[in-house]
Length: 238
Image (tube, one colour):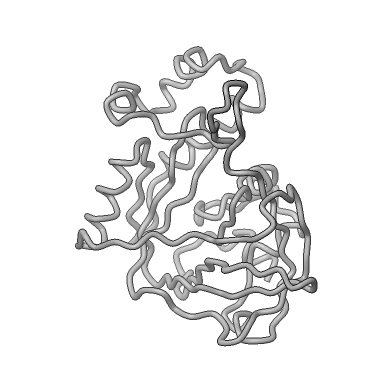
């Protein structure tokens, strides 16, 4: 699963959840809250989750709202920038990224993840524009009637909050029979790693903290991991 602002935490440990073919050699026990078993979605179950929440926008000096996350480029502009690891140097220069910086390293890792061959049965795509993301989702679901769901949280002014939540009444409920998951990755502008993976079910999970704060959490359960790398962090942490 992925919540708002969770991206820096995941990339810090080199354990991007979409990279199921990776052994994630930098895995850490601190990543344990990223993984759970299906029975953990039952009412009353406890989940220890770190919410890394950032404001969705900030005000600029002229009073305009400015997003705290990279935004999509216009489709026409994104299409003229070759999205390829062979173009890394050009992209770094274009966005004033120092070639040996952490930002450059994370950008390089995004290319590696996007260019890695898909697993058996998986269809993957790195969308560099909103239009291309929608086109991919529509094609994979076979319908123009799509519904986007995200984790919704309260207390968004809090930057970091580690809490023990309990699963609320009703527990996790399956949202749709078919799902395409998209998660933002580290890049100078918005890029979303999308994939359609067999045996995946999306759940809406009501979480309640000790102080009464509530989170409607999107969780994903993979029921077929037979093609995953045996060294994947999830197998070591569960």
